[in-house]
Length: 422
Image 1 (cartoon, rainbow, N blue to C red):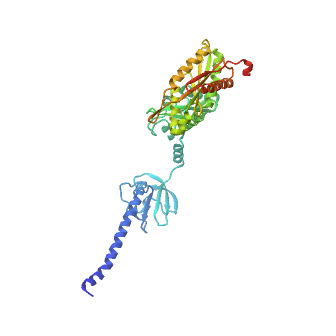
Image 2 (tube, helix red, strand yellow):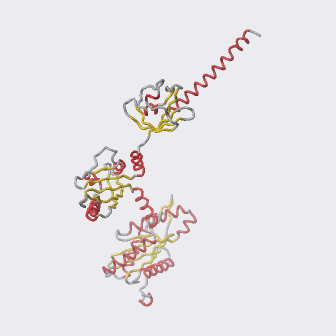
Image 3 (cartoon, rainbow, N blue to C red):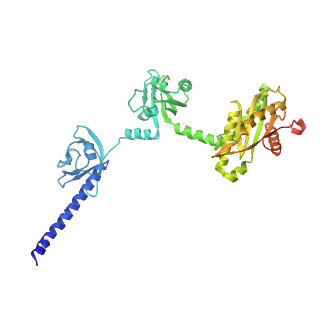
């Protein structure tokens, strides 16, 4: 065997050993890095109970942040002996005592976690559930808030001192009167207090709260305090509003749907009867709309509908109503009209105003599309006395206008009472 081979054969085991040691060192460094990232405390102990390794979380839980625990006996912080799972009162090096849950792992490590008290768990559950408790002394106006309520009024916990004056200032000015009335009613009658109101945060944010409570009386029956709970219902209000809008409005144009239209028409006729005024009902149909849908696609058709809805809104007064019945059919209610004008002139004026805003070409993408319009107009009380009959006459007038060509209108016919079935 040559000298070089002999030297290599002697050095090879050492090189293998060195490689293994380097690999183990690298793995230990990686494991230590992961250990330091844990938010729970971890202690590795020697057989004599002294600390071999630990992470930052363990040092903080034992009140030793910034100090080394290595080589220190664990019994100076934790009572001995320890069960596999125990709740202990740790004696921190900073002089404070901490309630900890200690778990002995199969590897021999100790896992340390802070132990929440019942009060802490209750406060935490209140915070995440957005529910808080309050306690108001009627005579002194002293007010207690649980921690969750601070956030409901836009304050960090402990940043302000709760008081009845602060509460009143935070309630929206439009809601203060009914909140105060509810409190007085509860105090005077003993009824449960249940109010929904808005609060204004220091940054101007508006939130909705629901407050419930009852009155506490002394031995003589005199009210001395009110106690209850409050919760944030802002998201519930927004969800309810969205559901109501979806149920009562067309999602494409934002106009009221048939349900709202019929309700508004019924109310308009009732007001007209009381004031001896006139109501005009106008059915509106778009000519050639299907051809645009077929030729350019539904997205182009949607653009036409949105544009026509916007034009109708602009053409009508604030006291008038416009709705989309479906497809390319719209309807308008004009109320408070004077019965002194002849029906023919009234119809002509209404049609002229609407056709002027609806007849111009509609921009669709990079082109202009000509859309024809047909109007059917029925007047209350001249054409019908009931809502259903008025709708029928306006609908028939609209189809008559449609048969006459684009941008035409027809006025409903005045029928005798017997023919109307009234």
